[in-house]
Amino acid sequence: MGYTIAEKILGQHANGQPAKAGDIVVAAVDFAMMHDARAGNALQMIEKLKTGNANIQLPYVKQTALVLDHYSPPPTIEAANTHVAMRAFADHHGAHLYDVGDGICHQVLPEGGHLTSGDLVVGTDTHSTTYGAFNAFGTGVEGTDVAAVMMTGRLWFRVPETIRIELNGPLQAGVWAKDVTLHMLGRLGAEGANYQALEYCGSGVSAMAIDDRMTLANHAAELGAKAALLESDDKTVAWLKAHGAATPRPVFADSDASYSQRIVIDSAALAPQVARQHRVDDVVSVTEVVGQKIQVALIGTCTNGRLDDIRQAAAILKGQRLARGVRMIVTPASRAIYLAAMKEGLFEILTAAGASVEAAGCGTCVNITGHYISGDDQVVISTANRNFKGRLGNPQSQIWLGSAATVAASALTGIITDARTVAGGNWRAAA
Image (cartoon, rainbow, N blue to C red):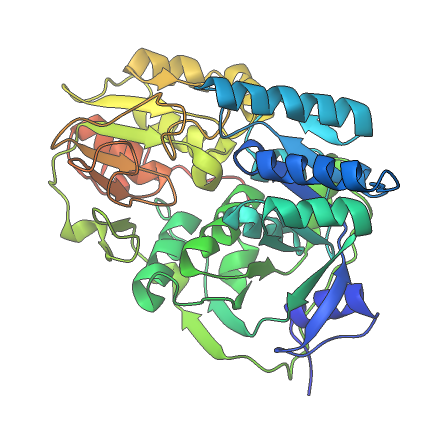
């Protein structure tokens, strides 16, 4: 019997041999990340341990990044002091530091060359599944787990079962990886893949640009997935090389690997999808909700704040104005994306259309900073990963989810709109 990608990566990092689903392994971690919303307790624990035992060492701290992205900029004194402590810790111990405005953890880690194919990467956020876009096993842990990694370089894992998802055919113009992930949420339900790995494969995945692959892996968190893994190919290798990553060690599933489920999707026939208010898994085709009035459009977050998302919005809004009464906010996922979008003139297009652009960071995703609070009875359409009631600070408003194309088209018309019906909605990323 063969092995899945997840079984191979976890087993190789534990004892050099593939493990089987259900096994408990203690595995060496290649890189770890801690963001500011989870750093306080972890740093306090390290100091407490060092106080009780002066011999406590952090030999793996240089394989760790501290990222100031959730409280960006800090909205409270407590958050500001957490940032002060994180900067001091990084300066003293040599951890990598990504400061306010550098970007979201799941974007800056791959951009910074901190991971490669075959790696085991952990981070203090459920969307650490993003790293699977590069054929790495990425998963979320707590801050105290990252502290343990700094001390020992290892963590324990239960090897997950794997769901294999085959996408047949390239996505049509106006349809994006976001639509695939929403379709999966509608099909399996939120937490429908709880503690399982997703293994995406097929010609639909091969046709995707890296930005879209990152969305595919990222949004697996809403399914409850422990990890989401894609195969490494020439696009993966070229992207990693361009960002200074270590030499890839591609891992492929065996043809006789055992899966908990096998799902086949005719991705070439998939239409744009929308998740309706308050539930990430209440998903329908955009054609079923065309005409729903909106007041706010948000593009950004770790799921869809990448350059191709901003390019798609600009293609739709170029030379246009937002519909009367609609406000649009765009938050790039990293400083590098912000600069690239500026260089391409994308922010000029979006600003001229009436949009506002924020500094790179988690921004409006979870309303930690209070940058945007929705009003009573307002309808927001967003590229974010979650639309739970009150997510934007007001339980009396609605949040709907869609791709950057769907969000931009809806901002243009003032109602939820199929991007394929507006000029620029058929823009496609270079594969």
